[in-house]
Image (cartoon, rainbow, N blue to C red; front, side, top):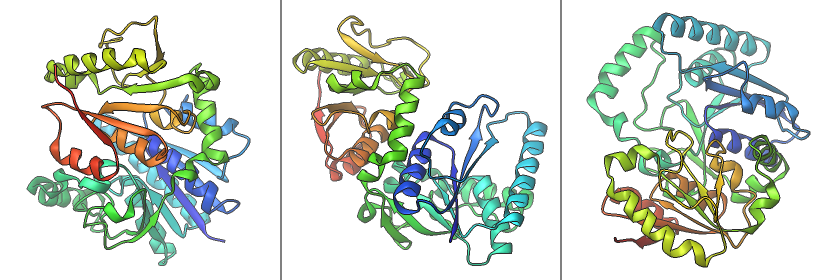
Length: 352
């Protein structure tokens, strides 16, 4: 029986790990790692996962991240390396899944695991945007040369700065929502589909329901949603104030004709209801509720509308049965627009 590690730093990674483990590797030696977590003492995901009746993981570990103080960061990474080494000495994994092969936790785990088990290989889980557009910053001179040299000196000669996320030599297989559309750097890997129905299975569905309940969202409330509007981070509006007018004009024109409209602000927004929508006729979903936990629960006749972003790519990926509409403005990224158009997202050119 193969031992598989799933290293997850974002909600999307966590849901993908649940989907893959529950559908492809159930009852096997699956171990989940929540990495790069700000809070490890009272972490919502860690606590909620512990409460699940059905989870496809034998064990769950949590590692702290995003530490700004340089000395504390070094100490934390040394501690994580020691923990990884101990776990690998106990039972070296055969496969290590990640949504980001640039993470130090992943590359350290691969380096240590291969010393114990030379056949161990890395698996990239679709991250979203970078999978289909690449990571432009990875091709910069600073990233390819300066950052790469510094990290090799700090961590070891085994360190890699891949040309884009998922392209390192550690990665052998890629699980992608749209395997035929991945960037060329990933096309040389063994590509496998991560099917939409995987996210509808027992484990990810139970996780989604627990998260919604934790944030006081009743699952049955979502049954009546006809339109879900996902909004960009407020910083985008601050940079381009006209975007607010574009969104407001479209939302006001279409929300009343569709029945119950739900509004989902960005999790990191600081300003409440910056779009100034009527809170009496719209359902405002808690901003901390991640989009991935909503998707499995939404009714089949719901339409999702948002800016040209990874959010809509995720919607198209996890719920291909829903209508997904991207609002194009003069400020829209044309390259990303082309990408989501290939995925079947409908584009509406809005004007004020």
